[in-house]
Image 1 (cartoon, helix red, strand yellow):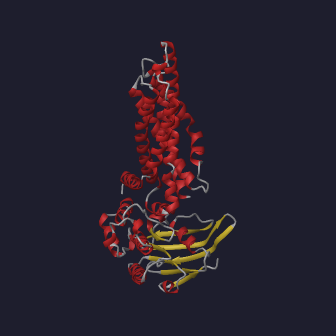
Image 2: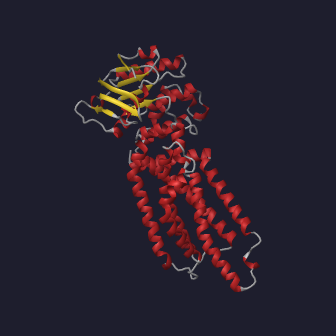
Image 3: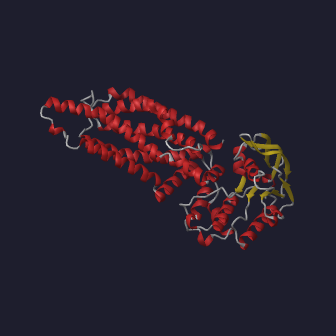
Length: 211
Length: 241
């Protein structure tokens, strides 16, 4: 990854509440280029919420998320963060009434990417042969692979993967490990929210949320 | 990517998904068909030729011109509320809103969806209006003026409906909320729309002149500009917060 696109992610005393229910509090973390952090914790401890806060999909109740692309660059606002991250999560869906290829081509277009990027990503996740099928006809494992392709579409400097191996077969689990390794080698930042020990082992270090 | 190309991609996606599912098309079409059928049943057996004297016929025609102006906008409003509300609700319910929020700017999402909704509403209006007028046996005194009023009115109506639909998608109780929230906002548009439509149909304007409707056209045009501008300015808060 080009050094001007290297990411520096800092979380300072980050917290999130939904009404009176506090989901996350006092999370601080600094992640630099080429690092993989596993985010673990029991169900409801705020792993998915943390990833959404970093992605700019939620607004923190306390603290702040700072993401710089390039060592001396200004921190991005929430809108900038949404564009800079690749995000895959179980509650993220792509359009059932479009084919896998059409989905990626659409998101490539709105992200200003070249169309071959979409084709390449489809092949990367092993869906090239099924790219012309409607997503409605995909199995849950194939949908998960498509989510991964969506996350990787814009070559993001930050990859946020929430339970990335969910519903995947053995080859799919290996694909996730390969993707994380490739992103690390390219000096990207990766955060993996998981309860799976094997998946958590992909991280260089772990952030354990105690809820 | 340029802003217009991004909005264009959202617009094309909206048309493609709608063409494949026909969710909004079916809802809008069925509602319009049911409404027009009920209106036709109500006027069955009372053609204008059944009124004996010219004075009775003239009075009846005048009443129908006035009724047509309102009925047409009632039909357009409730059909729009039935069909256009789905656009953001579906994104929220299915989880595709997350992918869209991560990929596109809020203003291009709104614009793409707004353009698709406007197209749907215009198609509906251009099909339903002649049928309604034929049922009521009302011939427009100025067809060009009628098209202008309906076209500009639909542009403003679709803007308010698209924005309100995004608000409604965030609520837990969605049923009926779109009509309830959007109606008070649309009162100025309906006032000008109904007046303009009546003038185009010849109510108090037998010669079908443009002059009596110019103020209404100005209100409709200004309303559309304000609705689009306000939606573009405010949509980011609704979509991303």
